[in-house]
Length: 175
Ligand code: FES
Image (tube, rainbow, N blue to C red; front, top):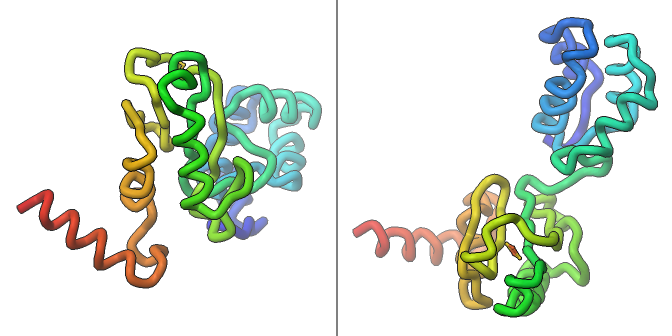
């Protein structure tokens, strides 16, 4: 979902208790539903839970799982920590940005992917590591980047000609 509709926000708010304890679960739900936290939603949540807008922003900016700007359907974290860096992570990131037609880390035009570089995701023994959403991809190489991205791109969103190629490859893997 890319457009945030106030009516949907009201329906979502109705499912939560009007207490401060609902703040994080509510922000998580809005983030999940709309892929970011729009300002008007933060204002409405503050009012509904009777907490200050400053409090809401403090929580929204403290946790890395929240974003104040729209992010892609899939968040790709390329680890550039020391262990990953020395084992080729910068080349993996370069390849990823080229494949997604991004000049720098950011979000693709089709809103499918947001690419970020991060410092150590805590599994240095698997370096170089890329995380996509909650999945860890170990021992990444430039050659693996394209296939990995294809698995996450939904069939209907793949560029023309790519769907058949992927489906054929998957069929061979499963046969
Ligand atoms: S440096 Fe990449 S996982 Fe630790």
